[in-house]
Length: 294
Image (tube, rainbow, N blue to C red; front, side, top):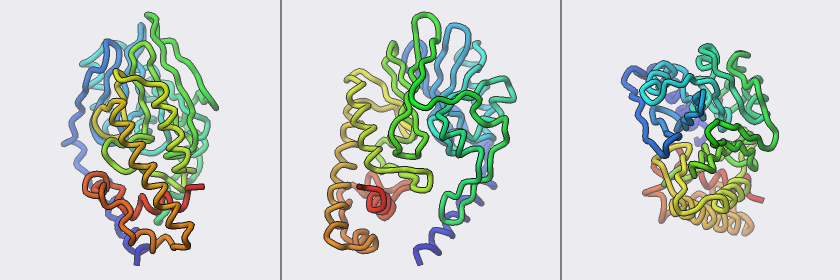
């Protein structure tokens, strides 16, 4: 029954994407520092860094929105979008790569992003993602970390982190501006999405969040993959929730409970009304933890 429900939801999701009125989507922005903005639209939050000569985008949402995104960038800076960096490979974050490359941008990402985008991917539940065209693929990849010097004494530090949301997750940190883009390692006020079919792992997520908390301070502005701009307290609360959930699920699993039994125990009930009303509900977060926790 659950598999049938998942297939139905997947079909509805695909239909809604194809039938969506993209013209109704508005791109808005929030200034985080003299050089950094976050752009909101539909899909993952976009970071915009304004360098001495060029503009840099972190993620680019869905392909039908590229024109609107670029038009909005022009209201913030006259610098050309020369570089686009992906936090991971999902289409709501990297779907605009082809359009951005066609207008002259150079795509950068972790090497696993290129691997997944260049090959057919099975997202589960009948969702098959065909390979992206070559022009949409990152042309510069890194396997650990990389620093981009933006001019005027500013820099962007690209850091591949542990397998968490996917196996190609990266943080982008701007030390001089005290801004961190965490991609989908951080969903503000929501349960995380662990893409098991893309190498996602709850233990990697917890490790990555812990690392981020060690980098930032109380003044750091955090760009999450989805949701409002956050701070250190928000990230600490996020970590506390997922740590408690992991402990409960692992204990229940060790007691011999099946996944279906664990999902009926109400282990997340105190957060479901706030954290479980979006894409990831209580059953799904239980599944992610049950299947990936060591």
